[in-house]
Amino acid sequence: MKKLLGLFMLCFLMVDMASAQEADKIPTQSVYLELGGAGLSYSFNYDFRFDKNDLTSWGMRVGASGYSLENESLFTFPVQVTRLFGKERHFFEVGGGFTVMAFKKSYYDYYYSGSGSGYYRGVRSENFHFILPIYGSPNIMGTLSFAYRRIPVNGGVMWRAALTPIFNRNGLWPLFAGISFGYAF
Figure: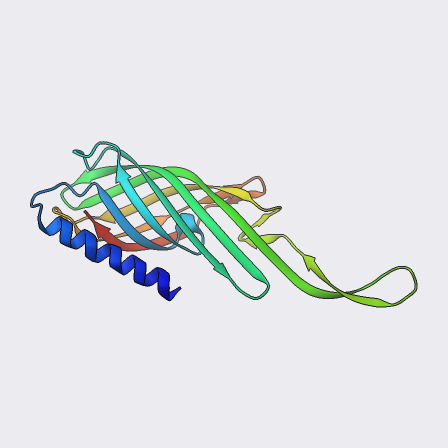
């Protein structure tokens, strides 16, 4: 985790040095850390507009996150197509996409062998539940995004707050949310 955070900060510094040389450039790209949202727990994201001269054009965000504990691991890869509406530094974001997930959740359990020879200790796996039940790995969860995004006029520190409904074949959770902090350039 410390290495990922260090890499993220290094990206901020490199982007800051590059953008300082270009004044009045439209900040159509951003990198940010999102807590909650489409990455489910957290994610590091890259966001860009398809039209480099129009901040309110359609764009895309891709991200990644993951963790590994003793008996559990999760990797997520959120992808969304988004559109910004607004001007100057205040924008409303609308988008939709999916999050690819790979997970492993196992535990030690004692079970009866059935052959009369007693109990055995074994490893059992179970399905992952992140608000909605998820059966099998890898799997996909659908995501929507309704967000307020603040982007400085010439780039710089940006943030966003989003309502991010998530859904899969087992249901819909409309009140999932996320908050993001990053750098627009």
